[in-house]
Amino acid sequence: MSFGMSSEFGRFFLPGPTEVHPDVLRAMQRPMIAHRSIECAELMQSVQPILRELFGTTRPVLIGATSATGFMEAGVRLIPRGRILALVNGAFSERFAQIAEACGHEVVRNEVPWGKAHDPREIAAEFRAEFPPEFPAMFDAKFDAVLVAHNETSTGVVQPIAEIAKAVGSIPLLVDSTSGVGGIEMRFDEWNLAFALTGSQKALALPPGLAFAVVREDLLENEPESFYFDLRRYVNNPPPFTPALPQLYALAAQVERIAAEGVLARLDRHRAMAAHMHEWAKDKRILAAPAHRSPTVTCVMDDGSTRARAADAGFTIADGYGRLRGQAYRVGHMGDQTVETLRALLQAMG
Image (cartoon, rainbow, N blue to C red; front, side):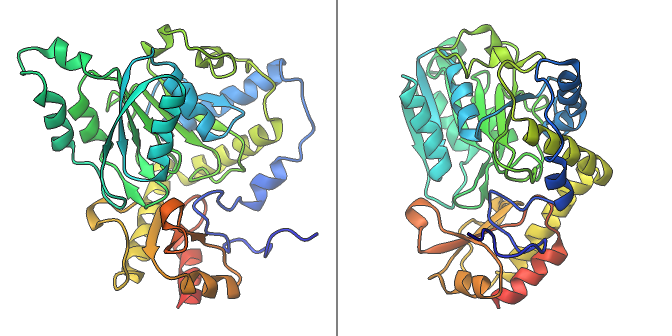
């Protein structure tokens, strides 16, 4: 059986999993090591500086052998059972809400149409409508946490996380940045986030199988109803459970490549790709409004003909997701793709 369409890099533009550079794939062929060894602990520690820079934090970045969805659940489980506000604007922010419900929380959805971002002023107004401003303790008691998708992969909308963090005040803000970190600016410490996560297979341009998270210290004081997803276990080396060593080898190789490019240059490259994509599609129906278009993924309403043209030319792009299936296509301009590789795709798409 033959898998894949081409060995030539720059033909695969899904918004996850993204294309993995050949040097990173080769790194996965290293021999196994004991996962309780000093060598493994040093391997995991060596990737911390770049991961912390990508998250914008001085805290440790936790690494788990799971999908990003696993760490979404892990973050929710750090919140004692109570009332959670979920900011929903697409399929994956809705998934965050569903995870909270499955963990036993009462979930209140603040939902805006797909393709829209939340207005922080409206969020703040909704919070403060129930209680007068002179009763901040009552205001804080309204919700135990707030959930938001930094970059909604199903719609290509990036949320104004810094402003949302200000709007929710002292309430813990949990951020799903699965298709954000590595391609979109994240300032965990400066924005005073409580929890943020990402996955390996998006803007980090790694194979699927790893998730990364940063947790504020006060959340780690809680005792979650979980064993594998008790994030307190992940704070110190060695890893608490058998790690995915080939993926860790790939991570170490990719960290070196990101360091060589520079984190700021990497973010600039993603902005440049997005600008090129949005200029190309200016006469088409891009789902996201201009002020909230994602640097890593673009969703364009379409009958499927454009995706078919891309496939005929040997390129892979994504169908619409969830309720947009068959009505749109999505281009993942993230990871190690460049303006040059994106330009070749767009020429093929006509």
